[in-house]
Image (tube, rainbow, N blue to C red; front, side, top):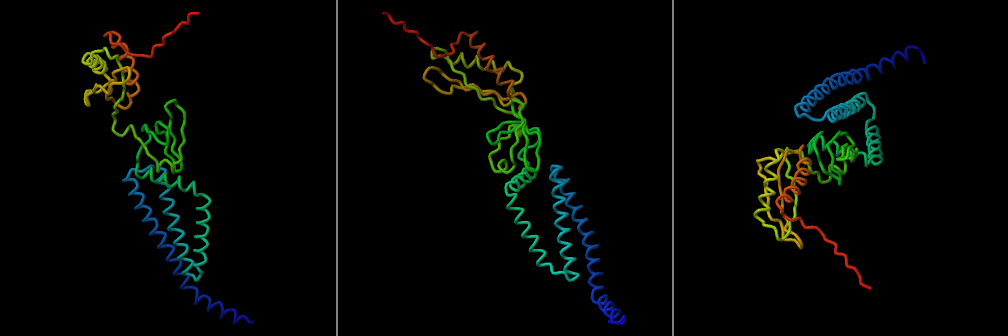
Length: 270
């Protein structure tokens, strides 16, 4: 093959592929510019929504790589590369990874839902999956709580997003539910006055909503009163313990009997 043939083949190659290469370059440049605009718009939307920083970064990276892979496939198709097989390989790889990381993907999806819908935030006191604690950190795959005894609790976001969540911090106030029993010989009106005085004398107990004292039930050995004070969420345990202690002292001072089991010793004569 002489030099002229090589020149002719090279010329034909340039004529045939130059438009495709130029078109691919244009598509890449324009596509990259469009992707930047889309990412910029998504970033602004996420900033307005006040989403978690971890979620923002992940969604931006995911969107960016998705569009970039799509752009690469389009560019390859423009220059004549068969993209059907390439797409099939990507799909198969995605399916394999999905099956291998099924549990992790469920936790990831749960983390995205938690960050999007915000059933709780860092600092909230919540009850979930049989645990009670203050939210310490919300991550993509897990949520960390600080338990009431200062223990760290790590809960996978998959089960957390699909289970019941009780958020004690949403409203800012909580009702303390207490039950006190007195003897059947006790005067109900006087007992209610003593219990109400205990509640109204504690500055941590709110006046609105007003605390309530009511007869709950006539039990086997006691008249049980439902004592319901309201307080700030941060004061819950202080009010709980103080009310319990102050009630015992107030009932004793008023001469109101608090029943308790009595053990009678029987001596055998022999």
